[in-house]
Length: 403
Image (cartoon, rainbow, N blue to C red; front, side, top):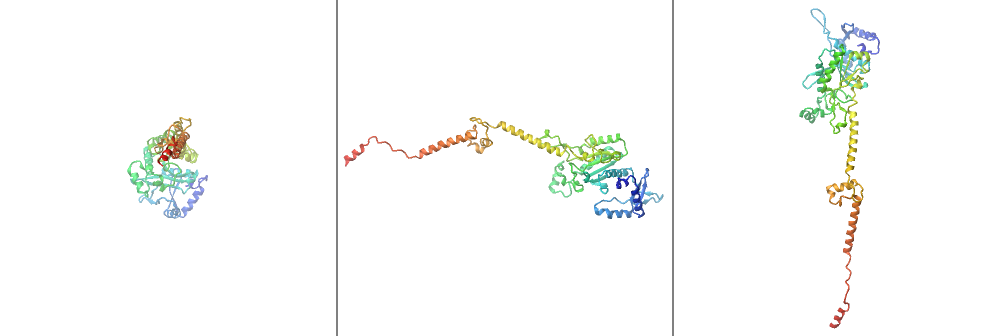
């Protein structure tokens, strides 16, 4: 409580005094004292009601009431099940808040994610910190009480939940997804269930998931992460873009995977959650949280590479076309696009004339043909010239004799 509410204080006096004051008003009570003498405080029934009135109108979910029950025989307080795992969850939230990742009221625990078969996968911690570049982050806190393959199963369930359609999806989309396996990958994230629960992440992929290991050894953490990377590859790893320019594209498609980062609570406490203490599955080095969640080799790189590949392909096509461009057999000039189209297009090829000559030469041919045709027309239209009379006096002599 002290670390979460007053991260900058070097001591817990202010928090302790506040809790004592709330205790005087019967709003909180001490549930147990841990071995390290840290006290675990919970809300009383009255305090729980006051908290609901204060927080729920603001859209802040409040946890269930931890009722105060006693053993009828021994009188011992029952239900004191706040264990080391819960302490690790609270400590993780405190470290995130101390680093400026999440408002103190922006944390939620045990948030359920219901799958299609009815199974509910509960996240140990959910943080919403858009101002820190992390609109939403699911966290699983593991004290190595679970087998590594159990963590892989959790990862798979988060991946499956991220592929569910929202209830208001249109019939066409529903039929598409039911028609064939993998069809959900053709459906935008805006139509999926997770976008009705969490805001856009600002990055490719589903809601990011963090595994925070606590109270364990580096060797166990390394072994667990190795299993997560190998056995869970289907759920976190990017794939290649399906594109015509496959060889020119080295960018990776992260759109269908769960971004997974790992760290330890000890690193968070030693260096701070805003330090380079997070490792993204598939990468070797540790990074800050936002750098680990970013995809420098993802969609932005793909758009740049695709634009370059498309421009290069266009240059190649232009060069190949220029190499095929016909040359006039008469004057040696290259054909224009218009002339080239005239001699190759079916609707114009029949009147293109000599297909081995360029446009200007063809125009000269047409001009000569038209001139010749015009001369022939004029000649045909001219009146015939009178025939010469070789015997001019013959007709007149006949006429005189008859008269």
